[in-house]
Amino acid sequence: MLVYLVNVSVKPERIKDFIDATKENHNKTIQEEGNLRFDVIQNNDDPTQFVLYEAYQSEEAVIVHKQTEHYLFWKELVAGWMAKPRIGIKHKVIAPASEEEW
Image (tube, rainbow, N blue to C red; front, side, top):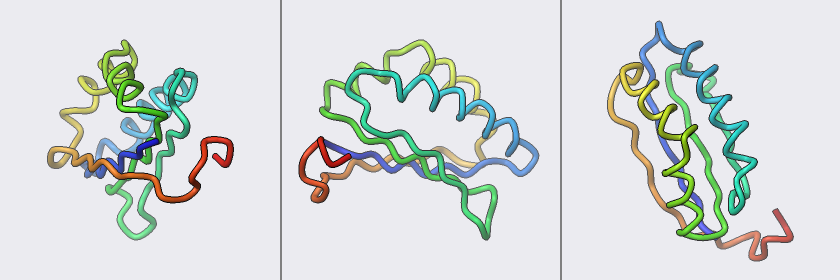
């Protein structure tokens, strides 16, 4: 299992658009085989700041996700709404240790 934390800075005038588009991406991503979680989190103190918490069974599941129509559409759609390029950092899962605990 692996997790990506994707930090996204959104232009203030595009917050609602970003949320709407990202919720649609979330709804389709959580249906993918190999996806364990896809959470969309907004900073309380700075509503332009978001974190996407993405958990996958394997690197192969990540590769498949990045080839889906909905991800490619989302990526293109929101690119101009970001105040700066998004930053995704891959993490190794320590706990929960087994997929059944997710």
